[in-house]
Image (cartoon, rainbow, N blue to C red; front, side, top):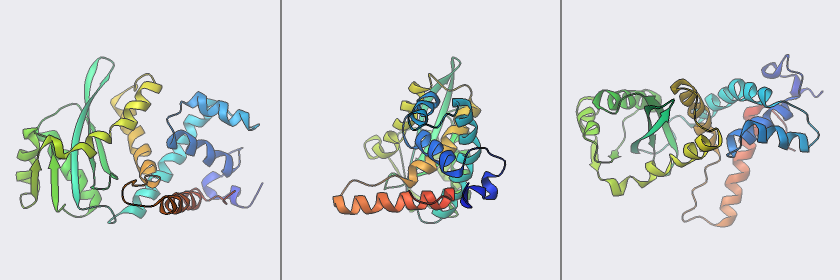
Length: 238
């Protein structure tokens, strides 16, 4: 066992840090089920149950996500796109509220049972607390709750309400939809909140804008993202 594997973060775990981090990375980076990750690890001669992968994601994934979020504080864009999408859990409607910046990076997510002004206010307060500043512009769809909430929470912020301008926020729900199908639905609103709170910061780390950058620059950004992941996971690059 290497010195890195004996890091306090991985203490009392039978598998080395590289194995744990690789399993967590695969599950969060790609739309894979826990059993798919189990099979991929087995193909490399690593026998680990899907239940162990689930526990690793909940423990280490949250730690990694919090560290990514901390490093990104104050660096994301000043144009906020807010959107909400309905997700049925056990036959009951829940609303997944999400905010992204102009480059497609997720600012925050919040699962709520309502789609009204009170729910919009909760999201805005959470955004202000997490980002530590108000946006330059806020863009939403035609839902009137956004305007009512903005007048109380961020009265000086410019608000553009137009469905056609909010494609970035609407598209940001797609990874969650794909995972919802693979997982055959979320077990509860708490389960959904826990998943997106871990998944979205990791997705941010590996999110590479495709517009107006060369393929060489894309490779550089991908390499930098992987280096940061290894640093956050406290492992050495292969």
